[in-house]
Length: 374
Image (cartoon, rainbow, N blue to C red; front, side, top):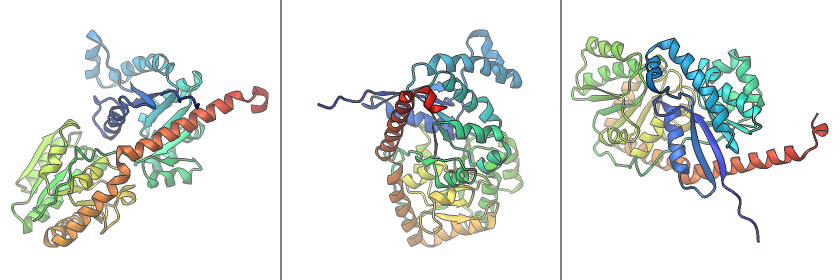
């Protein structure tokens, strides 16, 4: 009789939902998906531990917050990674890489734990070009996993091996609905930061409203550009613009259900979960050709792609969807079919296989006499 394999304890080092963004959302979905799994037992090691008691006030002070978080983060890593079989580290770029993934890798190495780096930033081409520390760290870990062929190709350009395991989307939560007729009810769910260029989406609405005065734009998000975006909406004399603010992931599906068209206009991107959520919900997508977006959205098949910063082309694409209902239906159906590869049942197999292979490799390496490994 073949002995059953023991459950693998995986420490997921990632932002908690206190930092609402793509990494936190995907980490949370992964953790929830592993609940009661027969093969994997996963737990979160937050990169943003919260001080208790009076020290909590430090979080309101910009630089003091960073120092306090690091003082808590390092001891947390030593305490929590000891019980892990595998350390799964979510990674962004630039300064964030130094503050969160790098310490996790160093502590895991000191504890003798295998590490999988789950790099997720669309800024990878510039980050890896600039940072020797990032390149060296990524080459040193046991596995690199990226969510898209775009990042895999970026890594390959720097001789860093990586395999693809995509993001997951809950197709039951983001339920499909046919939009017939398609109305100019537009949704954007991107963070209000410069690289996502939400200002371009506002300019798109101005051009759409020139033909469809009743067109609406719902902006779900928050960030440093909140006030500048509100001022721009006023300057463009826009109406029917709704600034919703920050919405918890458990509730955001309602906004997709109410919308008819999904619009995003970033200048830099990787594999946005928002596009997959739109696919699953049945909203035809208009997006800029930023980073890894073309890797998941083929122009004319799963949505319509336009050049970055080109509000005229994006507005024309939205008008085309409204005026060519057959095209909109075909695109929405094809996008929904492409979501099959992002189902948890599919993605789960890839993660379990990776974790098992990592443990097997680690056991083989440990069995080799130290003199042979020199």
